[in-house]
Structure formats: structure tokens, C-alpha cells
Image (cartoon, rainbow, N blue to C red; front, side):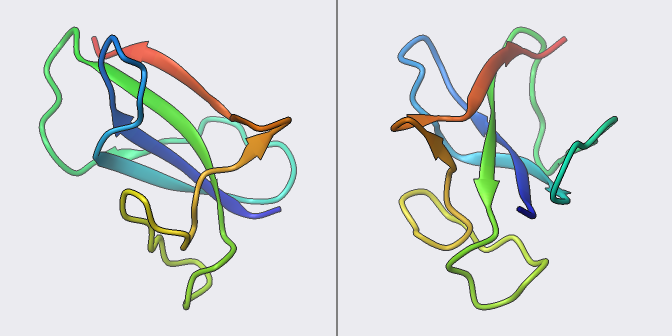
Length: 89
């Protein structure tokens, strides 16, 4: 399904924090996805890359999620968030 690669701030607690960037994804495999960060991120900061869906929003192709909202919310597989944590370089 279509969706979003969302970049959240996170820390050692590994909970998703505020969104700092996102990029659209199309159904199927996606390569070389680039999310433009909308605020500064320092080297060493932890970022959570998370898959969000397109469901529940009012507009297709417009990222509408805010923390805790149902619009364009996180995707779960077997009850777990589809995500990975990285450190900014």
C-alpha cells in the first residue's frame, strides 16, 4: 500500500518523538528514498525511521500525522511498529 517513511526523534527509551521529516512511499518496493528534514538534527542524535500508512487522512498524498493521531498513522506488523533506529552522522 502507499504510505510514508517518517523520521521521528527518539532517545534511549526508543519511543517515537516529534516528526522531523517524511517522504512518500508507493506500494511495492521503494529504493533510494530521501526524507527531507524540516528542522536541524545534530550528529549523534538518535532518529527512528518508521513506516506510516496513508489511511485515515482527509487528503491522499498529503502527510497529515501528528503524534498520537490516527491520520496517516504508524504501520504495525504482528502488533509491533515497523521501524529502525539510526544515529545521525
